[in-house]
Image (cartoon, rainbow, N blue to C red; front, side):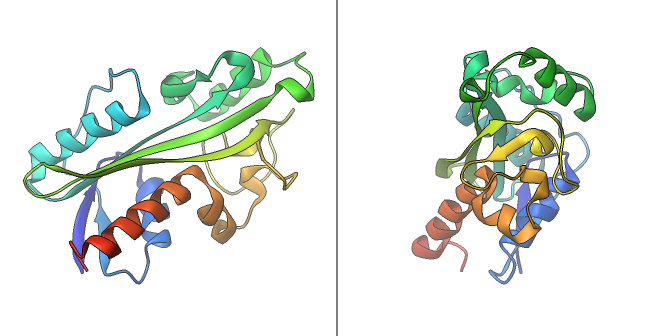
Length: 195
């Protein structure tokens, strides 16, 4: 089993990514203590690279990082790279978002989840960088029990369902992280780097 450090302090992400890549001979692991990157860039791609480099410095192992966020049309792409810092708790972030969109009609509630990924090799060189995007709109109230973050209020395009209402398998297939991971898997398989 080939180990790649996943540059995150969120165990949900590690579980989710390991579920999607199951059977590929790769296992994603948490970074060691001391992983605390300063995400001060202006784009998802640059923040993903900052995280990957920070984790690589601690491990000298291949490192994958992603930076994800919610971009809402009415908020000019916000909260965007500040999605995780939009409020102090997951519940607080959802409440703030719904409050900001309180009187906004359905046709102006368009949104997308974005996930940028960067993979570094054991030498810290960039092997892969790409993004996945999942389109939809912001609902009026939280729905569903699956997922985390903004999933309960993000209505996935063409489904009428919140991301948090989708079965895990379906979510992993169509989510921004799932789509970015599919590109990563394709890269890994065609580059013969680890397989």
